[in-house]
Length: 483
Image (cartoon, rainbow, N blue to C red; front, side, top):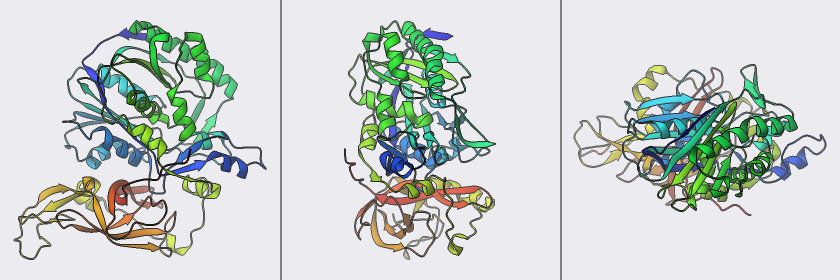
């Protein structure tokens, strides 16, 4: 097993976390499945992606928080096991969505739920001096009745790693182990899980205890000295056995995420790390363990505050609970409804148009003319009549707050989660953009209300399996979930 005691220059110095608005009440799902005896977890909630969200969009939303106070970023890594494309780099799209320089190095990692933690460990060990952004997101498909369909959740998390204070690595260990706890493949896209007791017994004895024990030894830290633990469990009950075997005295913060939002796959440990760092004190030691085809175990020491750490707790507390199991099946792709002729629209994307305008659309880049007026899209021809034509200055509208000029709820236009909201949005500087409005929890926003921008799937070409991305407007604040 690879173990090492290290005190390198890099730290986790920024974090981001994001969950979709909707949370399914698992008890309601269990009630709908009672006749069958199937289901999964009966308690807590499961975060459910909206029809226009996927693994990339949730990772982008988390990354926006993590880099809010950052400087230049040298490298971007996207981790997911549910990429909407198998042959199209998602990290490159993330660079465009964040409007980072196109020269930024990027990498997609996948293959197991610990890919996010593996990328984090690599960034902490790197010695090239630049900041690395690791963004993870999941929107994994599931089959109705499969226990994982309710146990898993959709969401994203991100970590910014670079020189400076925050949470630095003081020891780690890695173990490769081809434990067949769960798998998915092109021939079987929804998960197939082995028997739980086999998973628990094997994972604890052969993977988690050896890897975590070695990491603690490498860090020269006793288990009882750990102030917070984030251990990704393949099935419930693993941490209890690990803690008993090693002498860990603190609860597993990863369990709180599982209970409130579901297992977030590659994003799970990074998300729960936010819960640990939000309340951590300088000098605290935090244990991380990413599980999946083995384990990466890390021991971090807190040396200073980490920007964005509070986003995880806020995301868990905010959202809109719902109990409609059929709506959940439709949103998660487990039920194919016949939406009628209005849904039969062709949305083929032109590669040449995407090549010409894609970066401006993905980054939501408008233009500012010589008179200081903004507009979208950016052209050489200003909308303002008294300004001469000419090159415009880039203006990133994705980071601006818009206000509602008009809004319409349309139940005749096809939308996978009706009604379809759209309206005219006013931006600072004068730009007005006709946009879709999403994430409406109750009453739609009124004229003059403020809206924030969310990175979403704009169109899905179901015939050719392609999707495009753009930004949609959403209410700035989300409702607080009932306890």
